[in-house]
Amino acid sequence: MKKGLLLVVVMLATIAVKAQDIYVGGSLNLWRNSTGNTTSFKIAPEIGYNFNETWALGAELDYSHNYVTGQTANSVFVAPYIRWSYCETGAVRLFLDGTAAIGFVKIKDGDTTKAGQVGLRPGIAVKLNDHFSFIAKYGFLGYRRNVNTLGDSFGLELTSEDLSIGFHYAF
Image 1 (cartoon, one colour):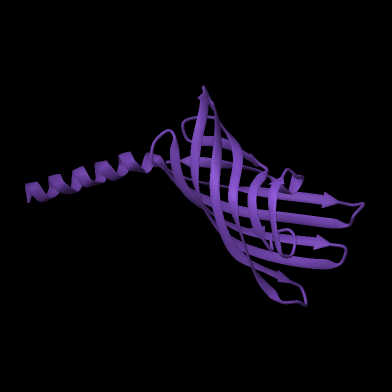
Image 2 (cartoon, helix red, strand yellow; image 1 turned 90 degrees about the vertical axis):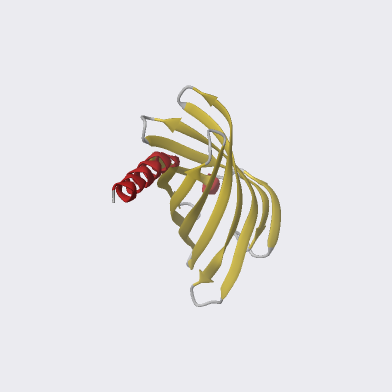
């Protein structure tokens, strides 16, 4: 009985220590262009696991809505990523996400199309305290199919639509 209780205590202590490596968070993007009559928003909850101070593995679930002069499109993506933190100075950390996303885009009164992307996304994390971090990602370098445009596209994109601001809560 004592050995069983000791085993349970050790297992719970191990889980509690490792839980500090798990983080949750997300981002919210909003954009309105009154001249072009366009509106877009994206909600992207995120969960991840820090292997060490340099490497992390995570995933986002993205939902976005775009309205462009009478045309409405909704999309859902699952976007796993591996994060490489390459520079940390005090509370500021620079990182690069290698991401591969797959999802669907539904255009109102139209067909649903498969979409996806593979590429790199730079970002910055500012640690506010032991648990909260401010996260910003900007840009995309890679390949996209039916994301933001119909068909295949590749290259570097630095637009306001690729800016996301969010947070992480580390346990």
